[in-house]
Image 1 (cartoon, rainbow, N blue to C red):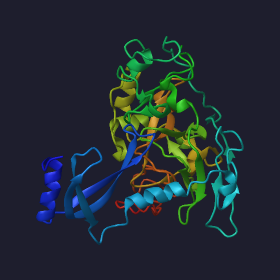
Image 2 (cartoon, helix red, strand yellow):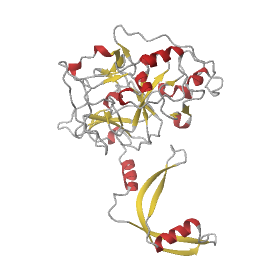
Image 3 (tube, helix red, strand yellow):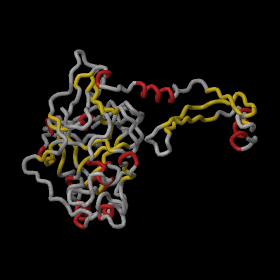
Image 4 (cartoon, one colour):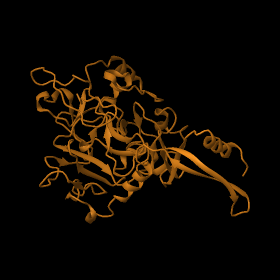
Length: 387
């Protein structure tokens, strides 16, 4: 080595008393680059020297001292969360249910409660893996599929890829990861020639991570994972009763209703982040998008009595999940599947959250009075109210 570039920069920082930022890398098989990086704060270079390396060449070494008054090292937090992950059901503290799905999911979902005394398990609902249509609701017939065989590989000939802007929305890494959020994702469906392993069926493959439902001190039940989850990975679909929105009783104080608001997202209504993206909308949709107004979505999913693990995921004003509308078995945007995906790399045991998307003062009771609910997400930019 010679005294130039980075070596010279560290030497100058020491002589001029300029602190340096330190970032550490940790091995991670799920990362594209094989590592996860953590920021460890500001350090001062207190000394440097040159010595002969193993190969006989000159190597410059530097001694750094962390500047006082900074938060606890992120590196310690990373190793701490890894160390808390149980290896089996028998190691789980506060276990109140071994599997809330009752064996319906391929991977058991345990529930833990270290808050209540005596501890109680989540009750009052029936677990389901599939959407249940309310009386009078019928899903459209399956759309015409692509003619690919085995797996969809060439976006130039795959008709499903053409609907997604002439490219596939997922990459093959880690079993399929969404490249970017879209107004809607067109997946391969029952009439497509490809098989179940096709990457363009990523959200249809069920749970892929070891999830846990746990009791929180002030937000009821929450959900976290024992596994590291990469950005763009599918977490789960929001499951419940599919019904007309105008049939929901405003006085019931039901916080498990999810509006299917893909058209509203396309227009950016009610503060929604508009993300049309590169998609090829069918001609009939253009009229729907144009006529959609503040009247709200026509359909919703009610998970108060029937649902899956998604019903336990809490709100946050700074979430680590995002909502993605997906069409697979049909192409009716008003009845799209609602899928929750990772907005960032999520370390083990970090609680899952997504933005419920309420507009302040938009929830009314039966008498037409505004209802309010405090937000306890704890985010730095918390809005203080859920609605």
